[in-house]
Length: 138
Image (cartoon, rainbow, N blue to C red; front, side):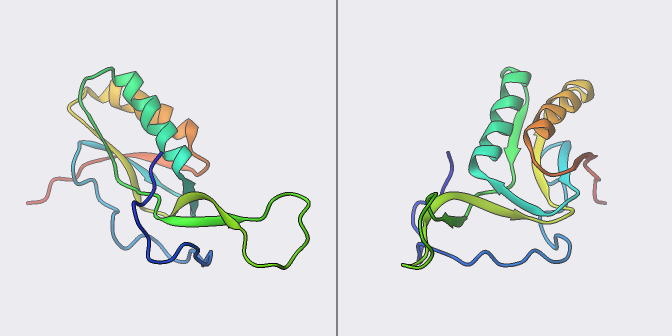
């Protein structure tokens, strides 16, 4: 499971997700990408589940790029604990996702295989996504 090696501060405020993705919204590495249409948080487990599902499907052909990294710590208090006595411990790591952000990319595969692999990833994610193709710049 992915997480930062080192952080300056252990705990962080949740924050708000407003607007669309200003960066990370173009297919840069592969030919096909999975673009997020909603906003929310992707946990490290969800990101890894999508990566494993796609890599099993393509079976050593082509290449997968994971474009998001879980850098934000999310804390939670245990069940049946009274309020107060400080902020809870870090439970998991996640990444904030905005509409338009590219989550995964695939390259070196036929279109049908790439579509089915990205569809498998989409079933593992809690947000609506769509398949996008790379636009070549002139």
